[in-house]
Amino acid sequence: MSDRKVRVRFAPSPTGPLHIGGVRTALYNYLFAKQHGGDLIFRIEDTDSSRFVPGAEEYIIESFHWLGIKFDEGVGFGGNYGPYRQSERRDIYKEYVQQLLDKGKAYIAFDTPEELEAKRKEIDNFQYDASTRQLMKNSLTLPAEVVQEMIAEGQQYVVRFLIEPGIDVVVDDMIRGEVHINSSILDDKVLFKSADQLPTYHLANIVDDHLMEVSHVIRGEEWLPSAPLHVLLYDAFGWADTMPRFAHLPLLLKPIGNGKLSKRDGDKLGFPVFPLEWHDPKNGEISSGYREKGYLPEAVLNFLALLGWNPGNDQELMSLDEMVELFDLSKCSKNGAKFDYVKAAWFNHQYLIRQPDEAWTPSFDKLLKEQGVESTPQKEAEVVRMMKLKVIEYVDGQGNKHKRNISFVSDLWPLTKFFFVAPESFDREDKFIKKNWKEETASEMRQFIQVLSSIEDFSVEGQKAVIDPWVEQNGLRPWNAWRICLVGAGQGPDMYELSAFLGKEETLRRMQFAIDTLG
Ligand code: GLU
Image (cartoon, rainbow, N blue to C red; front, side, top):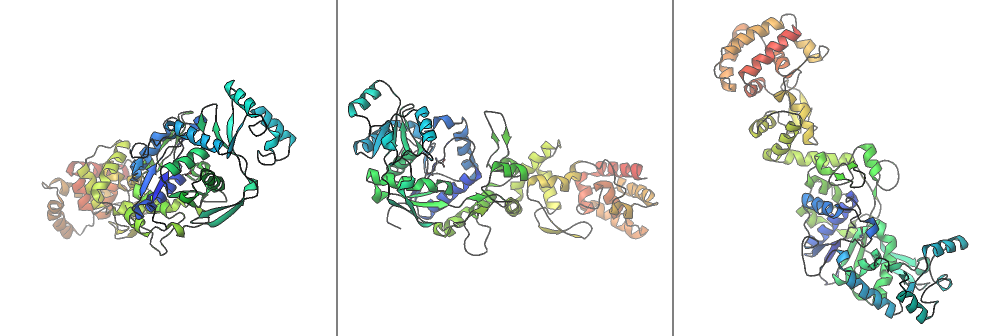
């Protein structure tokens, strides 16, 4: 790499919610910038006013805030190269459009949409280029005075890039190597429109990358077809020496079948394709987001980082700092990466179980509130501890081994409901209940209630001191039936711990209910 300071940018257009592929693009830019001690710029490309969607810019900023991706400069971050919102840079672009016109690298075209349509009908595969521009209404075919007159009269026009045919355009891509394109296949792209006095994406993008001293353009593969045009624009301006290096990232592909990942895949298979929930201002439609689904930002970033790149060994779990260290842009894959959403849940599981207890409490608390349950952070922490909820492999109160399958905090509800809500019914077909609730069980439980009622200190130790000797004396084994009473099934923690958690009154109440119901 040259000794140029690394400056990269993420430059979304605020046309809707940020797609998850855009998040990966931003992440790779971030990793590359940090790795080289460079700057990451956040630029808003909003020159296509017809596609502007209110709230999209705020949504994008909030997404990165949640994900923990920090920009060094840009919209909302400040910096010396501003303004960073393209709609605030109109005058700058005008100046550069004029430069191209003056140099004869661009021309003014007056063709109306109807005239263009007529030409398309007349000529098969019509393209506005070297082979057709002489047939059109533009500053190359009209006398200069006429052009001036038409502009003075207020006729709408566009400025088109004059592309010389037959040039071998080389895009030197850090991932794909040299990509060659013959300029003859390119059309004279519109760079500026008089109607809204705004440049198109291509011109604004190149001018800004140049003025903001961008050293590397890292973006999705869908922009590769624009790259030859961009190379030619740098040439036309005389900026070839400082042209950024390109890296076009592999596409994100459908989890099943062929083609690009789409929102429909997410809807069909039940995973979000947006970082945050999105409320469409046009039709009120709500699209799910990773944040609202219960994903941790670290898990999302880790998952995305490995879609198109890997550190070359088997390591999968990486902090953002580790990724910065290991990331290698030139080792990104050329081939599309299948969007393995099952793996996303796996990553979330890995991050969730590594979090400290305190980190679980707020989301657990939120979950319980949603379920209409009154609780306290202390209680929740206690449940997490008792159930060994962070342990992947654990042994239950029955001595059976299980693998924990918690990918989201919401998965905790079926596992912990009984701590907060008493059993309302019992499944008589349940194996555990069938085996452990017999003819004589109700009467045994009645005796056991007597013993429990006499206990003053209902802590684990207090209960043990009374119950252990009683069990010894009577030879009764109340544990499984007691579990049925308090849990309603053959699961849960140590019985003393559970009854201490529930307290004497609730414990006795649940036992009486089971006796009355199961008989
Ligand atoms: N505004 C473009 C987008 O929406 C930027 C493409 C680029 O990075 O050059 O992704």
